[in-house]
Amino acid sequence: MAILYQLTETSELMMSFVMVTDKNNCIVIDGGQPQDMPLLKQYVDGRHISAWILTHAHMDHISGFVDEFKKNGGADFDIEKIYYNFPPYDELIVKTDVEDPEYFRSELNNMLPEFNAVLPLFRDKTHIACQGESIDIDEVHIDFLFSYHEGLTANLMNDSSLVFKVTTPNKTVLFLGDLGPSGGDLLFRESRHLLKSDICQMAHHGHGNVGMEVYAEIMPEACMWCCPELIYNEEEVPEYLSDTQRFRRMGLIRLYGAALTRKWMDILGVKKHYVSNKGTQRIEL
Image (cartoon, rainbow, N blue to C red; front, side, top):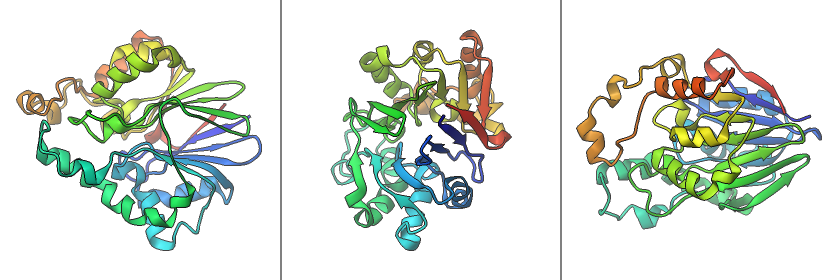
């Protein structure tokens, strides 16, 4: 039986998962920020990491990974393969025909330059994961259902999130990364028939995320929330989302707080919620 650990937050809004297979190998997802690395190392516990999956290039998800390679070339981990699919920095940084050029550039500069700087240290271990691909690690099967789509510029980095479905002999788990409404629309159109899963990682920490139709196709029995208390219990339209005109200019008109997502889960009959701020969660798969 595989065991999935949803690690509790040492840094705010981090996302970090460690899966241990029945042959005692690891699959790591994101990892969070540098201050989250000691806890990650505790749960990896020296095991071989068959796959380290990086969902997207935001600091709350991958800056810890990058820092480990800056520090000592990743020597504290035994990594076999690294899976990711990030937007092409050099091609996109010169674009001006986007909804909000300043925000667009800030997204590109959030983590991509730092990641690209250390990439030569592990390039031989990388695989650019594309929609439609699958991998097998011991008893765990992983299908990549969504990857970077050219042209999704309003919410660039979140909408470049890798979405993948983990299948074990007993359970299915869907990881949505930080996918937003527009990315969710494409996921729904292109992979709707593949979404049904027992457990779902809530997109973008449960707010400003994919639409209800996506979750209705997933129909999860349990949800995993990577979020602090202030996000988990926030209002449907919190103060930071109240400037409707600004978000409309940015092309981001379907962003809502976690209260709406929680209503959706109630409608779908979800009874079990794993929340990272409640401590590290152990989930049997």
